[in-house]
Length: 91
Image (tube, rainbow, N blue to C red; front, side, top):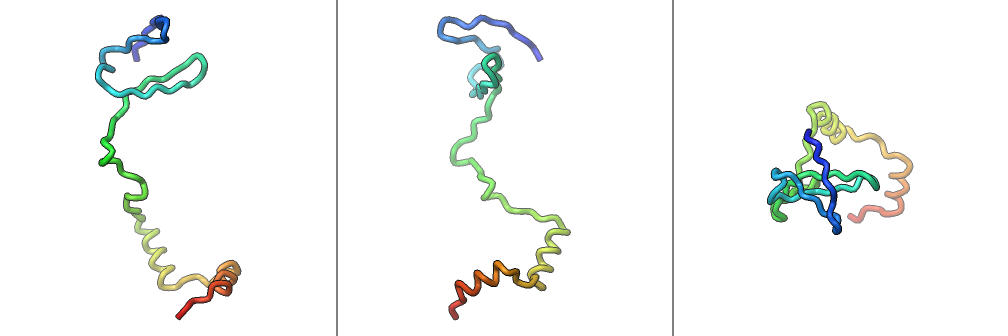
């Protein structure tokens, strides 16, 4: 890591190294005396993937436990019995 010491001009500007040219940067103010400047990866808006869109991948053990619970569900607890009594199934 290279350390560069510069003096900011009257508007608080400094020149970044050439490797930052034509790139988006993230400037993080860590404290009154420290900032971090990192290059940022710009992702086009139509390519952004939200966590909710990704499939949930279960381990073999968790998949087997899930299927076992479907085949043999645990008995209803008190909270579920109250909820079922309050909102009976229509059918």
